[in-house]
Image 1: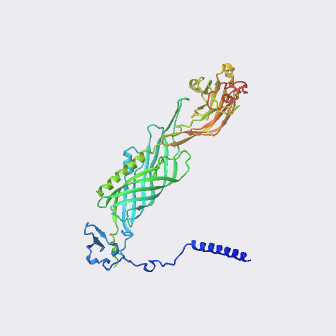
Image 2: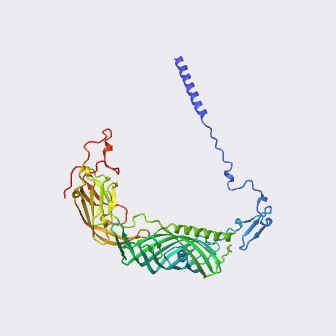
Image 3: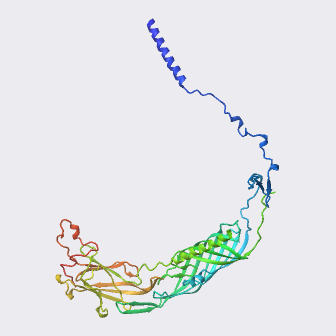
Length: 296
Length: 201
């Protein structure tokens, strides 16, 4: 019995030793208060002399009253953004009805000098809103009389009016209004007649020849143009500009004897890109409104 | 300096624009007239076949001019229709004397009846007549059958008429090791294009 008690005591001693070792191996965590917890929002390194004393800074004011700080070492002038917290940046500097303009497109007359066989002239009118949004109406006259030297027909379209409407967007609306870089969209419609005459056929094998005219046909075509262009003031109210136009037909009426080659306003059905070169006369509608830079 | 930038950009844009406009003409990628394209096929296999001893010409052609002479290898052919008539006929003479096919009595004739209509295709391809085949008939000496795939003949370059000839296939391939070489499928010349049965009028 005495031996059994001593054995039980040894077992208890071993179990106590194991429990104490597990407790000793755990990580000790002390509840230490964060050093910065009570100092958040405070500059611990701030000295009373660090405050900006504007009276000691070299500074000046621009024409809008903005404070311009001057680096006395380099001479560099830097706008003081902290001094103009209430300054307003105007979204659009130009008035709503900024200008109206009329243009003449001389692309077709010039291209006819270089061998183009269609087109006459085009005029357009536009209303410039904020020097940013520019609704446009384009009207023109198209005509063609073409006998290709290496082919067997004469294609004719009498003088036919056409119209396009759309809008331009001026990317540099807050810059110098003497310059414009814009993208635009146009929708056009053309209703016209066309003829293919003096068609000459010959068959070397059968020894036959034939000459005939195709019946006169009428066509309706609607189309769109996506354009990119620039315009530069040349002198006074006159400016000039180029335009590159990507064109695509939206609808074209059926043609029993073949579809038209030249569509007034759209141009040749070959290719998807055309251009324009416009001389523009601008009529200002309202002077520029100078908005105060700093709200009083 | 900035004032010079815009005119320079304008000039560049102008030249780019002119360049685009100068690339508009694509040329005529189809025919400049409406020419029916006729193809030759083996009735036995349905495969295209090459004929090298065929005389083919238009009936009543000036000076009996031929479109194909014996000695030319052809597997398809443009056959011009007449402008001033509503039907055109073509005859086939088979110049195969070793097989007894050169008898004029075995000539075949195909006659097409059609209507014509003027048509303007494009700036480059021009204007011409297009034909709509209303009916056709043919003799069946060597020709087994004729198919018109599309009755409207315009300048689009596609085969619209198929002529199937009676052809007897060889009993055994010439090269037993590679029997595929004896097949007359494809565009290669046929050793024995027409043998055996005679056509029926």
